[in-house]
Image 1 (cartoon, one colour):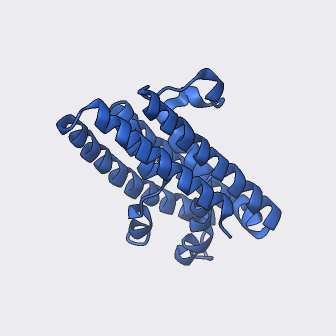
Image 2 (cartoon, rainbow, N blue to C red):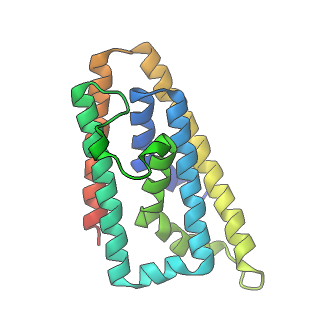
Length: 199
């Protein structure tokens, strides 16, 4: 837990999505993003346990594909968030802008933003191995670390959800929601570009 706390506290896609969902929707939407992000970590832990993450990270072509897909997804989230804020539409976009898992709402956004994040995968290839004992089965050890990682992420994102919800209650105006929506959209687009172009 101590090892992943600094990584968790760095604002990223999940942090931004929680902010956007609470401002545009409600506190429960932020909670869904938090749990979706945590489940995304579980997916990465599973991939690491079966060796798929190592395969992706060792293949330049596969890693490039993951970066591009993850980057495009974040950019799409940013664009739709910006459009929603500009038009004053809360947490909805036109049907033609929806992805197949859009009906999953905040949970789906949190899940896929983490699953498609190559940096999350790299955590389980660079940090996690330092805590593994080769003399014992690896899968249970990775599972234990993943649970600890998920706990840290959940505590942080749920705390931030409460903070944003309190701020929205104090300053709940259309202008504030539009400004926060545009800011969240810009941050997501920036994160998407950075993810897609990272080396």
